[in-house]
Image (tube, rainbow, N blue to C red; front, side):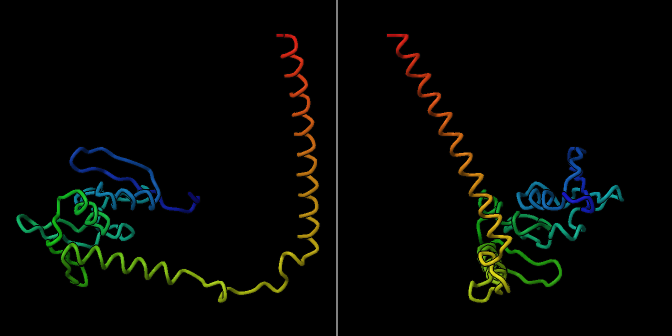
Length: 181
């Protein structure tokens, strides 16, 4: 964790238990495993406590509308997936974005999240032929060549020492076997 990174604390409203400090990635992981409820409180860098959905970095942006009960949320996409996997949701319930009001069934939502994730990953992937070439490839660099020769010499020396130790241990083993016979 970098010294400039914010530190977060989580207070579970049901139990009063306070967890942390932790970084945002850890907090997001808890949220995506359905371990942070919409009523739980978050404190950022010793500041005031706020409801978890009000912490932008958590991405608690989705309302879940079960067929037989009150709506739940806002919560994370990961929590919706957890609820589906655990059987708490069946797939036909509705999921609605807090701001844009996009609405999907749970099954459509999961597929849409997969599609968006794949698109994000694809946009981050650089094809080899699109990668910029360095002006001087490392292999042609005198400094690289010198460092490589030095490393090879170190490895050869280490190998010679290891062989010498192995020979000594083999002789010692032979001597011990002879003394036992």
